[in-house]
Length: 104
Image 1 (cartoon, one colour):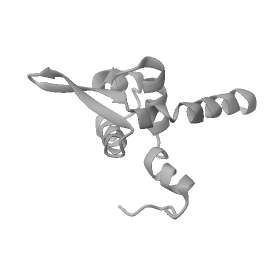
Image 2 (cartoon, rainbow, N blue to C red; image 1 turned 90 degrees about the vertical axis):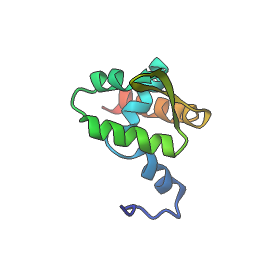
Image 3 (cartoon, helix red, strand yellow; image 1 turned 180 degrees about the horizontal axis):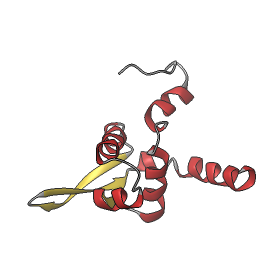
């Protein structure tokens, strides 16, 4: 699917990765809680469909923001952990939190 944003802009490129519904909340939980299993995230966000959660995690993984680490081999299961690139989004999420505390 083509991006709805002008990708010449760095803000637009960032939104292309983290701007979909649920993505920021997934990042928030990974920042607060550390590595999480798919089921942990699915439980935390009961309104998200498994397909949507999987798609968001795949986008984050493809973008190098999240890494999947195997924790079981039979059946294969992963936990998701922020990469250094993902941890660098921490101040952005903190700024969103502070703005929300002040203005919502």
